[in-house]
Image (cartoon, rainbow, N blue to C red; front, top):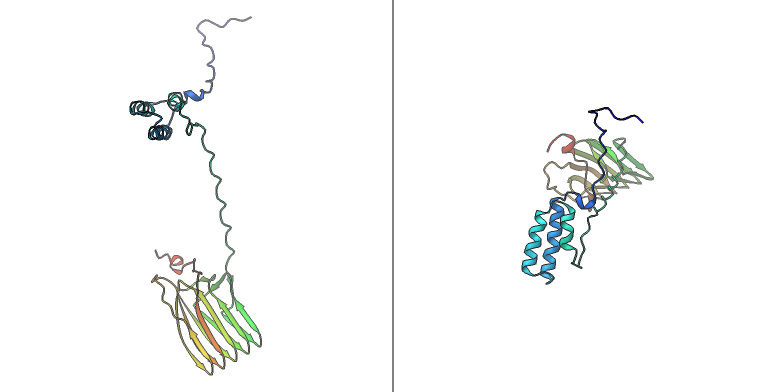
Length: 227
């Protein structure tokens, strides 16, 4: 058996994990014990001297071994040194699909046409309805211009326009043996998009109004870099 050479140092042993009682406590751990002691004092389980003595010891504690005896004889809410599990991260909302690029003209002749969902709206849009109906829904659209002008022509037909409730809606149309009804609203935000409805309803009708509960999320002001 070979003896170690003189002056040689033994290899250092790895440190054994510290026992739970020897682990250092945090300010939150001290405050948890202090709260238990305050409750015990309020319930009459500790008198004033015992409460003051234990509170002082709690704030002076260095390890869990110092804290444990302070609440060991208290039956209410025993102290636990187990750390609560981390909350599971909330799943992130799925990314929205890209907005559709649509024609700036919507036509319905002896039938119906609808434009709704997530689509890109430019500065001009026209709707033509003859013996049919056109439904234009801007509530989920992506506005690419701060102002959108919609020209309506309804002949023995109807055009319906819905906008988010947080945009400005204006109208100036003519109804001949028909109706041209635009429920004008002004958005509180001066940077909100403006939708203007104009045109003619001949033996037909046009109706435009905000859709309650639907708000535009992709603001033009954000796209233009305006705060």
